[in-house]
Length: 148
Ligand SMILES: Cc1cc2nc3c(=O)[nH]c(=O)nc-3n(C[C@H](O)[C@H](O)[C@H](O)COP(=O)(O)O)c2cc1C
Image (cartoon, rainbow, N blue to C red; front, side):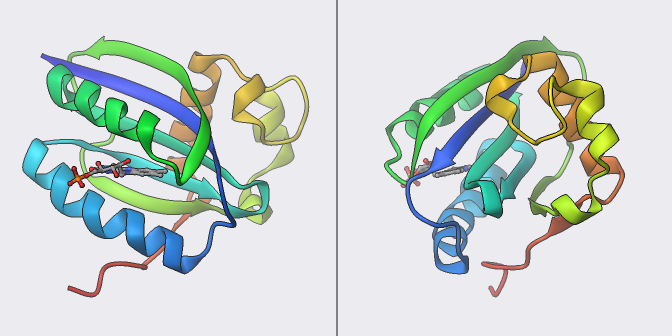
């Protein structure tokens, strides 16, 4: 029984390599162990996280509970939650949204304005945008925390 969950949040402090390292190190091991896949995308200039999680309902719900209590981000906003037949993000990846590579018209397709603001988007729109970004290399992988 699989679910997909999408949320956006605002980083409490600047999004730098030290912060990402602290998040990613734990996440890689945990997610592998719990069968959770997805993308953690960060938009450093905007101080925004946009994360999609897929996996067993019990595991995804438990992780979301942890995420809500995590002081490294705030305004955790549930954008989309659905039961799914199949994963769309079958590996766990972490990447930065490189706005220079994102076509403003792509953002405008899913948003009211041509600025990336997941908090003002519908859940379906935010998910569609994330899938599009993932497939157009507008999310560049970050290699922090992979050193082991
Ligand atoms: C933006 C953000 C994304 C996170 N993503 C994950 C994740 O994908 N998997 C994970 O286990 N923890 C993630 N965390 C950390 C969790 O909030 C929490 O600290 C962690 O699950 C606790 O793990 P532990 O019980 O092993 O200490 C994330 C934290 C932040 C701020």
